Amino acid sequence: MIEKEQKAKLEAVAELIAGAKNVVVFTGAGISAESGIPDFRSPGGIWTKFDPDDFTIDKFIKSSATRRKQWELLLMGGIMTDALPNRAHLAIAELERMEKLDCVITQNIDSLHLKAGNTPTRVLEVHGHARTAHCLGCMEMFSMEEIIQKNKGIEDIPVCGRCGGILKPDVVFFGEALPEDVFQQAIYHSIHSDLFIVVGSSLVVHPASMLPQFANDGGARMVIINHAPTPCDAMADIVVHASAGESMACVIEGLRHFFPSAETKGG
Image (cartoon, rainbow, N blue to C red; front, top):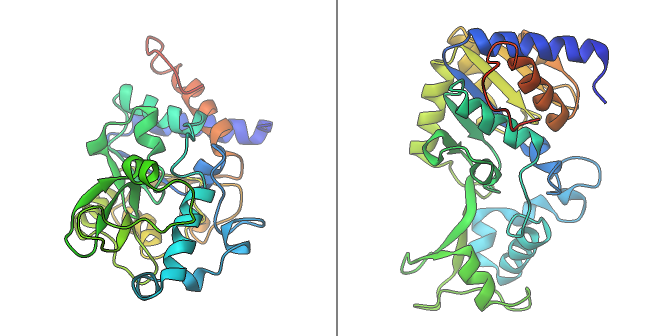
């Protein structure tokens, strides 16, 4: 439930969006948790069931046991299942339809922004995505749907159907660099934004957590919507500690006053 003080802040966020020209939205695990995808770091999250030290790129390559755990993690996490966008994803897609969104920068690998209707070229997935995997031997690319169909359950570790090599999901592992072209685009859009909105991110995962600082250095106004405090709260103009879905739905509702003819689907 959005409290009265929080609602007033979210109405102020709507006013900032209405007056901005380059709005960048930065999303993290908190937004997808409301679609049933478990968070990694929260109490009861993924890292209470798995050891994050097992998920380095070196261990993935060298250890079949680690590869089995990685595939189990992706399957258990609901990333490759039928998770659906929630109100926050739909609200961000609505911002694009209202022509009030420059781009979405996301730490999530679940493709829910695309499912919600954001244009692929406006979604910068800085930690990769789980739609595909590629062979580390012959570099053949496979869709995740194809891999799941050919590997029922997680008893057998998926391998390349062409050469039998190791299949690696196209997500960023610990110890692996972010996709350079995507991250450079994220830096550019952050620096050139005039409003930078964080939704559902703890802002502790580097180097993606540097992006709010780039936006701040570029002179952008900043909004942070997250259940818990973040290291960047002090630099934000507005901070709302509430759920992503309720908050973004409230923002879209507030925008109706500025764009009354817009068809709103985010609420």
